[in-house]
Length: 294
Image (cartoon, rainbow, N blue to C red; front, side, top):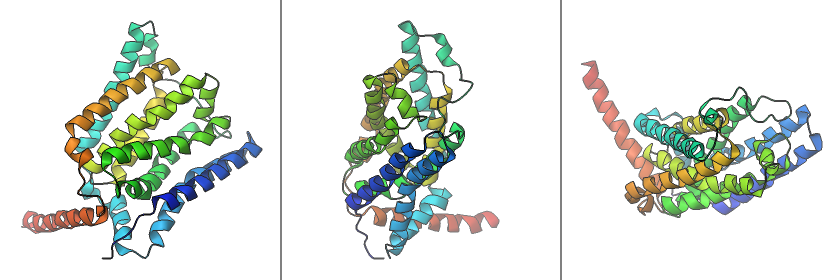
């Protein structure tokens, strides 16, 4: 199959133009159904751009990779998903524990009755569900690989997390969003949100690579952390502590998996390496299936 050249600059410039455009237009329709429509269009834009980029690439290898990331369940390694969920849960518990030690409320260990935001009168749960799936199609469908093709996974995590943080910036202007609620609290909470994307993305990158770049694995984890972050009754102050705890957790993950994060074998041939591994996995499954039937 013909080698594919990723174009991250073109992809991200297009994504930002469409997403920021739709989100800024939504300011004209505050507290109306049209606000949700324009917000949704901005959210969907990256995934549409990713899919269109892949389908119009005329590259069979890139198209095959997208299909396998979406439906190739053999790529998923459930143990790593469970470990990622456990890391997240333990980090949250430690963060709340530290908060309580310094006078925070023990009630933070409980669940909230409702979500902290609503966009255009639309359920926050629906927004979270849509975001978890749609964002992953964009970022893991093309965006992360477009950076990973040219960098180690360590530097890819930093670069992508920075881009991802900037992608959210218009949301701080839009009433009803979680990010807008942070502007009412003060600059430190805005900074904390932006900084927190870096350790979170290190964990997501680790999960993505360990699951052989399975989009299904990252969708499951993304959905979990979005709901968990909303339903646990953490105070904004505790979320600052949480960012520090996540930094420690991600540092430990990098140290334990330094061969993965600093490996350069995939640079320049990310698709080729993955599809070769997939073919070997499929051959093994085909050999095992007849043996099981007999």
